[in-house]
Image (cartoon, rainbow, N blue to C red; front, side, top):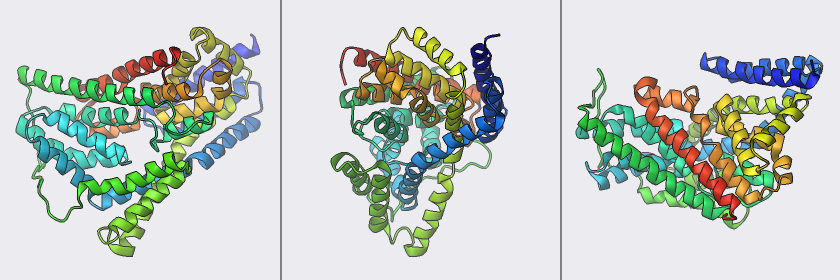
Length: 432
């Protein structure tokens, strides 16, 4: 058999191994290493040489991504520890009252994501508030996970933000973080409206079907929306403004912009953070959280060996034929497939940038348009049932996949796919 075909089969078997293993709860670090050996064995290169290529890919991605992960964790932890996340949530819910409860919870999640708060922090912040108000409105808890995750993906479409996928793509193509502003803002607005409208409509349908909010044993939903001692929610403007101004106004690297925002948060909330001891504890917490970068880099390192085997060229030509030579459709397919396999938007983006960025430009893709298409595509099939954020959010809300995943799928897979198609159409007619 042709060595290229054997190598290509090995690549697909390796991808299947990653998907099947992750669904069974096996660490992506272990799976990506095993997949690297499989690709090396079927690609006709030595196992040790192949694994070295894999490790070089991991090391390179850690070097580029760790500062971003650490910066994001620092800013999010300082804002959460200061009480600002709770203050923002309370302010939005107070203003909305019991009308439009679902949209209010969705908006809270969107604002917290914009502030750079990690999705895992957001869910534990929003969940008790959502439960308290869903109980009042008698809305089933199955909608809560989609309120959080659907809001996160709509915010992450924005240009000019320090989101990891945005930074990776803009740096790879040599354009500013705010590249493609019209497309990015339109996609974010579209997803906000589409997801909020869907969730509001589903809440109404649930009432008509006779579905109710069912409290679980041991749960308490006593929420004090007028809690004293919290910082004013508008104080978020200071650290977030520092990040955006440094990133877009002074072209400061994204990781340094996040560090600057974190420093602003320390100065602003030093006493609320508990002084030097509290700041130290928060720094340690952020450092621990940033280690999650290793799992993402493990799947990215897989691209290092894929590009080194003969099946890669066959894969490249096949994807080009499927996309009809359209660089934006090519980018969409590649990012969506790898994000689905890895369960990671960041992993999908970095893999494709490492493997295909030169190819995308050679196909005639506009750099700014490619950034928006890639950032949108990263939020499509990364949210399949095995995604860690999906699993954790459903578990934290005490909602099964059967009960809640259909809403997550609509808001983070279906609607984001529509948004990506819009981004491709915009790119093809020259709207950036």
